[in-house]
Image (cartoon, rainbow, N blue to C red):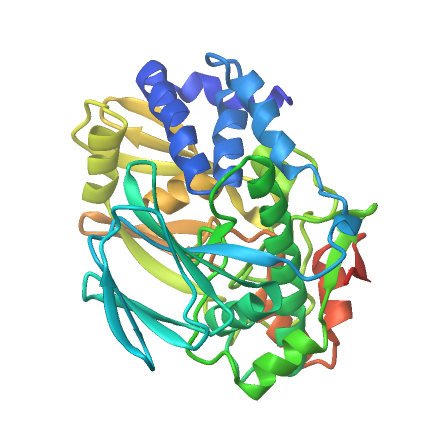
Length: 400
């Protein structure tokens, strides 16, 4: 692992022992959510703390590409759609039935059906989807099993605007298919009872418009197509808006992934959603985080300094308080904890008891920018050109 960053940050770790331990414990929480990048970012930051280097190597193995030729036909994918519920009610043409998640159950209505959890949240599933109910990690879980290509329709509904150009939807379909197969392979290898969930922890899955003509066409016209690098499936990350320049995976985590480097979008992003934003970050929120989560004894937040990488995106943030300074990983950890739209921001002033932030983009910034793809498609780029722009050195291959 590179030592330059560690040399730069160690002098700032006035509160190091407690902070390092909290960060170390956060790794397990991130791994349970499938946030391998956040876990790797923290372990890279921790350096020699405890067995961080050993754990870093284990987490880094997750990003080893699965051989693309393993998938000869369309698989079923297991999508976690709920957990921690008390009752599950299924409604279809034949009536309604309520299940209590006491014993393992598999439901196969063979027609479209609606599921409600505790009479609150609900999801509609197609006739091709089976539903498994079981207990895992001390809670009831509901996992849908459905054909991958059907699942991808739900990802398009959840991840992009259907009014966008078809080439954007096709690019999203190929990236989402690759990402899903990558996670499916890793989950089966680890004997997990699910492959992905339906949230931004993986990729958003919604079933409100599975039969929308543009969705169907985008999935069917790219059926079986994936992104590969040297014969393996890539980890095809994507996000909402890069702000004009994507992030570099190696700068964030210390691990080199050739197809996840920083690229500048030669496109007019200025008018697109989330290209520019302003946000007030209350000092009280930062203080509560430092005291409540990190256990630091401070009463005042005085300033923030940011160490930057490619394009000016933030990598590390140093918080200056009345009790000293603490440096934290910014790209994933601090951004998520503080609910900041992206790591690419500047402190442009103070307003009352808040820092005023001006930033660019939304999301982690790695891989394909969805709004960037929209901009490029409007310039006449097809989906293959868009994908090969964002995932440098990758190849598009039809595997089934």
